[in-house]
Image (cartoon, rainbow, N blue to C red; front, side, top):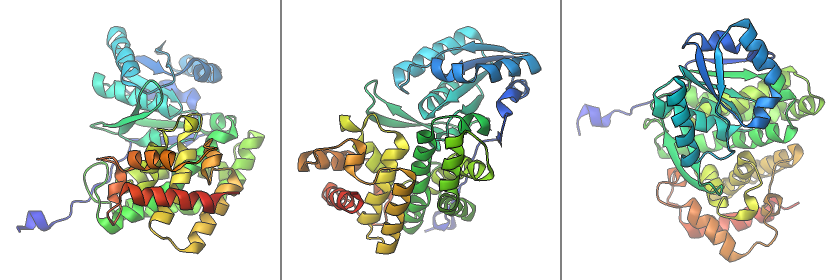
Amino acid sequence: MNRKEQSMKKVMISPSKYVQGDGELSNLGEYVAAFGSKALLVASKDDEARVREQLGEAVERTAFVLTSAGFKLECSWAEIKRIKAQADESGADVIIGLGGGKSLDTAKAVAHLANKPVIIVPTIASTDAPCSALAVIYTENGEFEEYFFFRNNPNLVLVDTGIIARAPVRFLVAGMGDALSTWVEARACAKSFAKNASHGNSTLAANAIAKLCYETLFEDSLKAKAACEAGVVTMALENIVEANILLSGLGFESSGLAACHSIHNGLTVLEETHKYFHGEKVAFGVIVQLVLENAPQEELDRTIKYCQSVGLPTCLADLGVKEVTPEKVMKVAIGATAEGETIHNMPFEVTAQMVCGAIFAADKLGAH
């Protein structure tokens, strides 16, 4: 074995710039100007309407052409191709993704295919998707299809905490569920020396970020939830928004995913779960991974208590699965252990039978 083969390549990736603050969307024009004068906006009608005032103010402050492409609510190949054609036709200099995870992923995919820069503007803090160089592709019926990886992370992630504070609190809580998995999966990948999304091993910095994400959740989640319920920005809310978007985004992408997200992907085969958010399904996946790796009872208890305190699912009934049958659970387990799933980053071999058993046990432990 030569020296090159013996060396362990460590890779950490991140967006080029991350900006977070109350009222920052009104400064969008100055960020667009760095790339050109024409921007194509990928956002649903409802999301665009929510921030119309701030977008209008941004255009007044720094003149630029903003064309709306709309968004049909699913990050599917059909939707990506539709908006890509519009980007080509409009001559856009930059793509802007605004809204939740699926519209942001669609904007990133369009920018990648069109070879254009992308500005990501999350209006909710429900996932860690904004910072990443990948999109989760779904079928038009909402079932997980595949991961689509890009050459680069977003050029800018622009987070207006005032807008996030006025969004329904359920979105913020779902983001806590997604962020909760970051350290649990990162440490599993570290044990198995699994590769991260950029085909390297995690850096000390990425692991430290993943752990800080976990600690921030336990410290500030309830305070941030209260702020969101009141529609106000507080330091705790700022911290949780950063944990949900930046810390979790850097932590998962540069440290790796394991069982939690595979359980989420498996759960999407059950139609009952389709009305539940990504982070809500991931939160249950955290409990399943802890059972799968036989985590200490104290950690399981703490995790379940945390989820229940903020309103995250801890059992299948919380995800709409009222009739739990061996057939349904095995269907989820088979989906979660499909070839290429990140559950195979666990530091031991995982089978569908093991996952099936862990889901049943987690469901019992997390039942109210």
